Image (cartoon, rainbow, N blue to C red; front, side):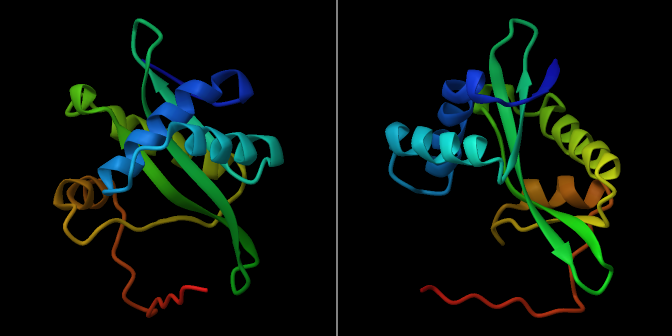
Length: 147
Protein backbone atom coordinates (compact mmCIF):
# COMPACT_ATOMS: atom_id res chain seq x y z
CA UNK A 1 0.00 0.00 0.00
CA UNK A 2 1.12 3.53 -0.81
CA UNK A 3 -0.27 6.78 0.57
CA UNK A 4 0.03 9.87 -1.59
CA UNK A 5 -1.07 13.48 -1.35
CA UNK A 6 -3.77 13.97 -3.97
CA UNK A 7 -3.38 16.54 -6.72
CA UNK A 8 -5.54 17.38 -9.71
CA UNK A 9 -4.08 14.37 -11.52
CA UNK A 10 -5.88 12.14 -8.96
CA UNK A 11 -9.14 14.13 -9.15
CA UNK A 12 -11.25 11.28 -10.53
CA UNK A 13 -10.00 8.77 -7.95
CA UNK A 14 -10.49 11.19 -5.06
CA UNK A 15 -13.95 12.26 -6.27
CA UNK A 16 -15.10 8.65 -6.71
CA UNK A 17 -14.08 7.79 -3.15
CA UNK A 18 -15.61 11.02 -1.86
CA UNK A 19 -18.90 10.24 -3.59
CA UNK A 20 -18.91 6.76 -2.00
CA UNK A 21 -18.14 8.31 1.38
CA UNK A 22 -21.14 10.63 1.05
CA UNK A 23 -23.34 7.67 0.12
CA UNK A 24 -22.13 5.91 3.29
CA UNK A 25 -23.63 8.88 5.15
CA UNK A 26 -26.91 8.41 3.27
CA UNK A 27 -26.45 11.17 0.70
CA UNK A 28 -27.56 10.69 -2.90
CA UNK A 29 -24.86 9.67 -5.37
CA UNK A 30 -23.64 12.64 -7.40
CA UNK A 31 -20.24 12.03 -8.93
CA UNK A 32 -20.32 15.27 -10.95
CA UNK A 33 -20.92 17.38 -7.84
CA UNK A 34 -18.34 15.38 -5.89
CA UNK A 35 -15.79 15.98 -8.62
CA UNK A 36 -16.54 19.72 -8.68
CA UNK A 37 -16.26 19.90 -4.88
CA UNK A 38 -12.95 18.03 -4.72
CA UNK A 39 -11.57 19.98 -7.68
CA UNK A 40 -12.34 23.22 -5.83
CA UNK A 41 -10.63 21.95 -2.66
CA UNK A 42 -7.51 20.95 -4.59
CA UNK A 43 -7.41 24.08 -6.75
CA UNK A 44 -7.87 26.50 -3.87
CA UNK A 45 -5.62 24.38 -1.62
CA UNK A 46 -8.04 24.74 1.29
CA UNK A 47 -7.85 21.06 2.20
CA UNK A 48 -5.32 18.26 2.06
CA UNK A 49 -6.38 14.89 0.69
CA UNK A 50 -4.37 11.70 1.08
CA UNK A 51 -5.18 8.65 -1.03
CA UNK A 52 -4.35 5.08 -0.05
CA UNK A 53 -3.49 2.95 -3.08
CA UNK A 54 -3.31 -0.83 -3.05
CA UNK A 55 -0.53 -2.89 -4.62
CA UNK A 56 -2.17 -2.57 -8.04
CA UNK A 57 -2.25 1.23 -7.78
CA UNK A 58 -6.02 1.42 -7.25
CA UNK A 59 -7.23 4.07 -4.78
CA UNK A 60 -8.99 2.22 -1.95
CA UNK A 61 -9.29 4.91 0.71
CA UNK A 62 -8.89 8.59 1.44
CA UNK A 63 -8.75 11.13 4.20
CA UNK A 64 -9.42 14.84 3.94
CA UNK A 65 -7.99 17.40 6.35
CA UNK A 66 -9.07 21.01 6.70
CA UNK A 67 -6.79 23.57 8.36
CA UNK A 68 -7.91 25.44 11.44
CA UNK A 69 -6.18 27.19 14.32
CA UNK A 70 -6.29 27.21 18.08
CA UNK A 71 -6.25 30.80 19.26
CA UNK A 72 -5.50 29.72 22.83
CA UNK A 73 -2.52 27.55 21.81
CA UNK A 74 -1.62 29.88 18.91
CA UNK A 75 -1.03 26.83 16.70
CA UNK A 76 -2.52 25.12 13.70
CA UNK A 77 -4.94 22.27 14.15
CA UNK A 78 -6.17 19.91 11.46
CA UNK A 79 -9.82 18.97 11.18
CA UNK A 80 -10.04 15.40 9.95
CA UNK A 81 -13.37 15.79 8.22
CA UNK A 82 -13.54 12.73 5.96
CA UNK A 83 -12.12 9.22 6.20
CA UNK A 84 -13.29 6.40 3.97
CA UNK A 85 -12.09 2.96 2.90
CA UNK A 86 -13.89 0.94 0.23
CA UNK A 87 -15.94 -1.93 1.69
CA UNK A 88 -13.81 -4.63 0.03
CA UNK A 89 -10.62 -3.07 1.47
CA UNK A 90 -11.74 -2.72 5.09
CA UNK A 91 -10.14 -4.63 7.97
CA UNK A 92 -6.75 -4.48 6.23
CA UNK A 93 -5.19 -1.63 8.21
CA UNK A 94 -5.83 1.04 5.58
CA UNK A 95 -7.76 3.43 7.84
CA UNK A 96 -5.09 3.02 10.50
CA UNK A 97 -2.35 3.76 7.95
CA UNK A 98 -4.21 6.86 6.73
CA UNK A 99 -4.59 8.11 10.31
CA UNK A 100 -0.90 7.48 10.98
CA UNK A 101 -0.03 9.42 7.83
CA UNK A 102 -2.19 12.31 9.05
CA UNK A 103 -0.37 12.33 12.38
CA UNK A 104 2.97 12.48 10.62
CA UNK A 105 1.70 15.32 8.42
CA UNK A 106 0.39 17.19 11.48
CA UNK A 107 3.79 16.94 13.15
CA UNK A 108 5.51 18.13 9.96
CA UNK A 109 3.22 21.17 9.84
CA UNK A 110 3.79 21.87 13.56
CA UNK A 111 0.11 21.39 14.37
CA UNK A 112 -1.16 21.22 17.92
CA UNK A 113 -3.77 18.53 17.27
CA UNK A 114 -5.98 16.63 14.89
CA UNK A 115 -9.68 16.95 15.63
CA UNK A 116 -12.39 14.75 14.21
CA UNK A 117 -16.02 13.83 14.58
CA UNK A 118 -17.95 10.73 13.62
CA UNK A 119 -21.51 9.56 13.77
CA UNK A 120 -22.55 8.48 17.25
CA UNK A 121 -23.59 5.14 15.76
CA UNK A 122 -20.24 4.50 14.01
CA UNK A 123 -18.86 2.17 16.68
CA UNK A 124 -16.12 0.68 14.49
CA UNK A 125 -14.68 4.13 13.70
CA UNK A 126 -14.87 5.17 17.35
CA UNK A 127 -13.09 1.99 18.41
CA UNK A 128 -10.33 2.64 15.86
CA UNK A 129 -9.87 6.27 16.92
CA UNK A 130 -9.75 5.38 20.59
CA UNK A 131 -7.27 2.54 19.94
CA UNK A 132 -4.95 5.12 18.37
CA UNK A 133 -5.16 7.52 21.31
CA UNK A 134 -7.92 9.87 20.17
CA UNK A 135 -9.97 10.98 23.16
CA UNK A 136 -13.53 12.26 23.30
CA UNK A 137 -13.56 16.01 23.93
CA UNK A 138 -15.34 16.61 27.21
CA UNK A 139 -14.15 20.11 28.08
CA UNK A 140 -16.17 21.96 25.44
CA UNK A 141 -19.72 21.77 24.20
CA UNK A 142 -19.86 21.99 20.43
CA UNK A 143 -22.79 23.72 18.79
CA UNK A 144 -24.00 24.04 15.23
CA UNK A 145 -26.50 26.23 13.45
CA UNK A 146 -27.50 25.81 9.84
CA UNK A 147 -27.54 29.04 7.87
